[in-house]
Amino acid sequence: GESVGLHLPTLSVQEGDNSIINCAYSNSASDYFIWYKQESGKGPQFIIDIRSNMDKRQGQRVTVLLNKTVKHLSLQIAATQPGDSAVYFCAESFYNQGGKLIFGQGTELSVKP
Amino acid sequence: DSGVTQTPKHLITATGQRVTLRCSPRSGDLSVYWYQQSLDQGLQFLIHYYNGEERAKGNILERFSAQQFPDLHSELNLSSLELGDSALYFCASSETSNTGELFFGEGSRLTVL
Image (tube, rainbow over all chains, first blue to last red; front, side, top):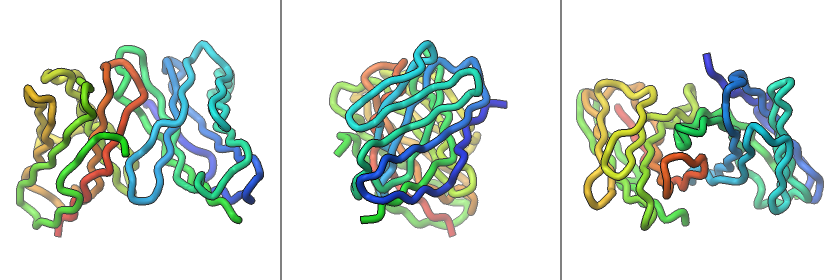
């Protein structure tokens, strides 16, 4: 069946370092992939998305890489800050079902000052 | 602040009872989504409404129902509650029905005792 999973449940990095959060997906038919950030006590917040016909997309301090050969997605955060501490979810979707997201389990990012 | 408002923020009730969760989407957004977040199941898509019409259903129990009203606010009704229904229920909205960029509310935490 469809599933999106994360390799690591927790990630601890030093402030200023780069963070890489990984995600594996199983449905090669997915049209696009999205990263969300969830801070404690809040709802998920959209970070960035990437269509299946792309392999890289950059935002402000974030880069998403998509490797369809091995069904792998990653989120890179440059110069990680304490405010980046949160749980990060990858999700997949299909063009005709945009908001019906299949979420992964989440990775908790902890930034040490 | 995502612009999505959910009430109540917290709700404690007993098994067998019925509750209604309410969501006001961002101004101008026609799509409303409901998601359930629990420790064992993660974030799960429940249902999607677009401009008053049901567009997609996910793993939503028959005991649960939702609707979107002409003013675009939505309600999620949970009946015959069981202990396992205890979870965070998120509402999200988007301008269209084919985007993965959703704006989530802060959730309604339901505890069933």
